[in-house]
Image (cartoon, rainbow, N blue to C red; front, side, top):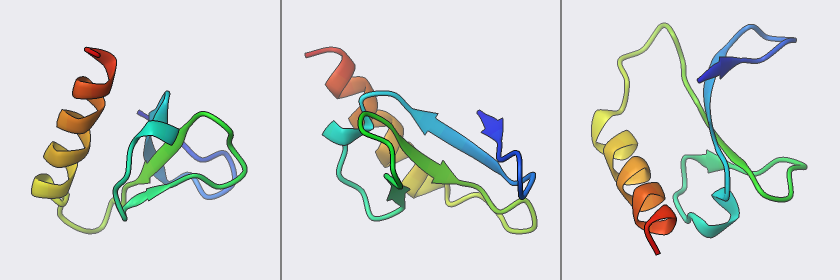
Length: 62
């Protein structure tokens, strides 16, 4: 979990994100990582976040 230096918006960075496929993940100009942007003024999309984290755990346990 970190925050963007320019916007100060929080995000979750996922290493080996190139192996994850979820519409809420953004690659940007990163080769290995993807990010999950978090809007601090809205509720967290808990179901989507759980799906992403479960998929990330599955990738790490391969």
